View 1 (cartoon, rainbow over the protein chains, first blue to last red):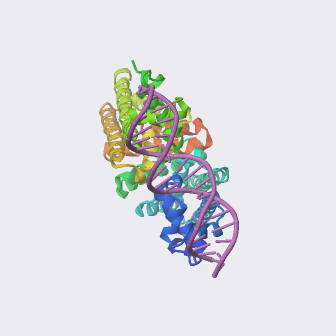
View 2 (tube, protein in one colour; view 1 turned 90 degrees about the vertical axis):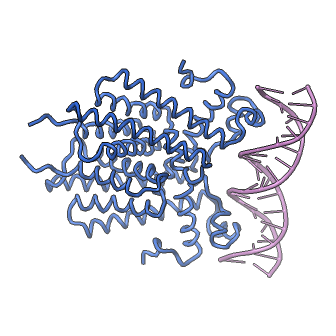
View 3 (cartoon, each protein chain N blue to C red; view 1 turned 45 degrees about the vertical axis):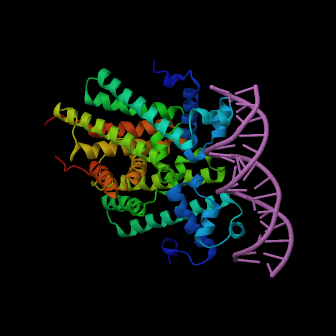
Length: 198
Length: 198
DNA sequence: GTCTATACAGCGATAGAC
DNA sequence: GTCTATCGCTGTATAGAC
């Protein structure tokens, strides 16, 4: 199980694995069917058997990525009891992606958004919406438990967190410096910690 | 003066204006010499007279953008007396770019970093370094004046700010929602405000 | 399910006329 | 300083054999 992260066995899965890595590193406009085919020692014609075109492949990429991310969030909910711990685990998800010299798939696609086919645009928005919804829920529960504190609606802080983490990845990657990301993540989370009541 | 922002008169400047907009919207891998030529009713051959190739054009793009940004920072230093006001003006710079449905040029190029020719990579890093240096200086002066407060080195908070603002732009653009960016910016700045001594 | 072969559009770039 | 014309390459995609 969870083969998606360690490499898929079937051809369609292998195509998705290779394409995913290529998009996360080079962008959707920076990779080609030929790149994927070469990596799997296939021809581009074989790729077209599994995915009708680049747009369909791209959409499948986001759908699988979003599903995997959703599963990771459920796992965090199960394993991390408190809101601050959930947030820390959430930031760690980003850090793990960055450690492989990748950008978040949807962060990369957000940059290229204007050039994407509409089915992909739709799925990118869905990814961010899901993240913000989950984060807002965590933030609210953290406030109720007296473990987090911030001003304004939880939704705003959720959006701030998604944006800040994506941006920290975006900038850290050219520097090839994961510590740069970690420092920002830690700083953001510290900001949300509830100060002892006085 | 400052013709760069309102449209250049000479051909080279017009090419830079058109290419800049195209890169900020579609990315470096999402625009072509043909796009720029069409927009100016020129041929791609004419473009090659002014810029030897796409790499040279890209480098010139960043250099001009960075110079303009540097000038904007100097202007902020002149016109905004206090650190919090400087930071607010800094965030406004980002907001103005976003209002034109553009991504920060170097934020966009950071996403495409791995596919960029080396002279462009170098210039992108230089842009972020300059921003962080300026921000760190502003943050330090704000702390000394008792107007800002944060924990850890000013350099870390400077990096956090650049990343968070770039990320907020990145995400706000697909939603075509400038308010989404403004909310994050405001939240970040509020975080840095010095709490009245008690 | 994968191949060979190929079509066709787009790309960056150059030569040489004007 | 801009044009026409063209080259070589890469891109996505398809037809049809195996």
